[in-house]
Image (cartoon, rainbow, N blue to C red; front, side):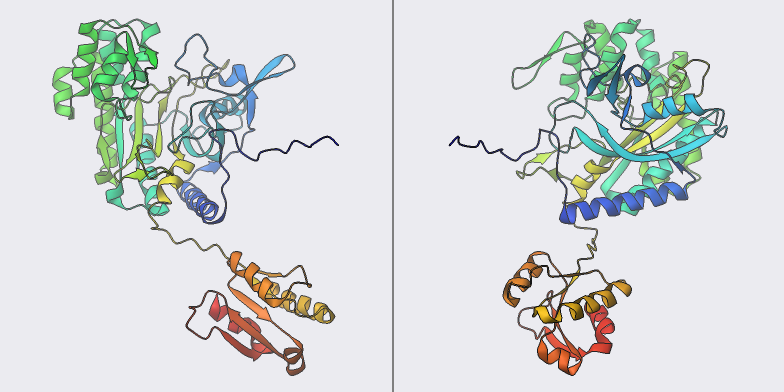
Length: 465
């Protein structure tokens, strides 16, 4: 007889099962985020997981010769289709397709999974949940971007982080763009320059790593070679000196070109509007923030943690920004007949979850059920009557599904399930119209079992859960 080859259970790299406390906390965080988005006046939108590849393009890949290398691409008849890698590109397609039906200022939120075909690890997944808010339309940019900053702070606080545990860093991409144009760096090198700077705070980079990427190449500790932007020593030095500037006044004195000055003015205006709100102290300028995605062209933001995070092996890691975004003016105008600017932010829900699992600052009520034990088959109908009463009174409950198991095995199951209370009824209880309740979460040295009148069942259980 041919031996059967058994499958080995496992997941591809960058994908994760979530269950028990982690999933309960994730659902709680998503509910908090959604409620806060609605409070700020945003409407929900849901788009499909797949988009026509040409419509959403790809703004991720560092390899210009293979721009779709960081996305999941599939053939679909005459078209290629792509699993969405963010929620902004599908929004652009949706607005272009439906702009006549939308208000002149469209505020939408979306909470959905996105997919990236990139290296996983340290809270970087290839499938993860993003929670986005965008403002699309001709608006006062200072007001719109300040509102997004306020939204970030209020949402992260609502999720359970404290003010000293995170900071909202803002900048304006025009500031660096002006310097790049002043240095006459050609268009084909500019994206590489932006992406090199975006890696400044990543582990193992710093100014030296960025400088290597600005020049010919960077060789990391493993020996892997990353091709650089090919700038001259003078060009790279000018950019490195820019990255060392820490305040607006110094920036204003050093960068005199019109585009940089425009970006500085926009940042000043944003800060003035933000000062009218209650979260101004949480917002800081950081001119090294440029965002890696190519479609941002003005305001940009990254929200970083102020506490240490460890991976599953206990090693301290940098998980990057938990909420980021920026302003874009050309993402929607790629479509025929449409020219609408937008600005938005995106919370990395799973990255935030990864960090919050290590804090234990939020209590998660997993609402584990009460279990009705089955002591005797002849009373099965009666057990279901008890179950009906519990559920009618909104008490999460289940009945044990194998009457052949003895009470000990039923309670072992209940403990593994983390059930709160066991309802135990044998012949004596049914004769005397009582129920025995066992508090499964009680301390071992205490008396955790009591018998009560049947009519007091619901009230007594509510005392225990």
